[in-house]
Image (tube, rainbow, N blue to C red; front, side, top):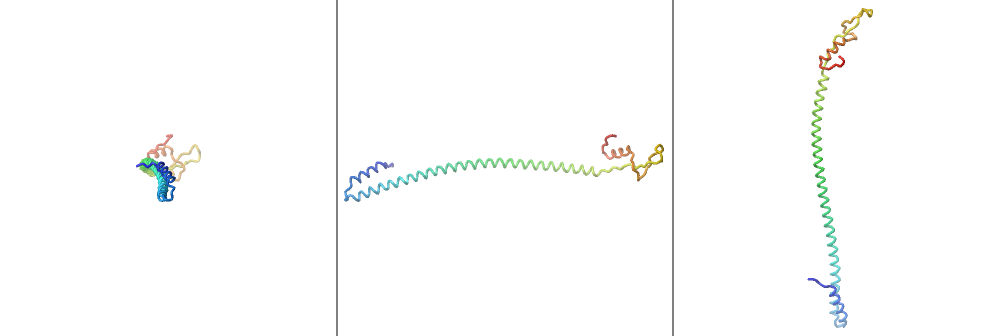
Length: 162
């Protein structure tokens, strides 16, 4: 049911003007009360419209916030997947480096364990340069070059300049 408030207001004013007789005082009070009720109804409808607009705005804000939350959740999920992949790659690299490190340490240990038996030391004998010759001497300062190269090669080490 639709109420034509403007028509009712005009009718109430006309009646107040027509019933100015004090005997019609009760009827005038009814018209005044009815007009006040119409004013109150206008205020309530305006408040309702304001509340409705506010509810619409809050609903729009809520929708925008929900869209942003969904967007951020999607981003967080993407970053989570990327982070997990990076962690997996790091674990793989760690295992690879660990095995390479163990192989290198084993190789170093093998190299450090190698021993070369050097040939007998030599010392020069004789008083003149044309009489000089080398003799075995455990305290000697010299080694035979060819014997040293042969000992190093026998240990499995390559010698340049042979």
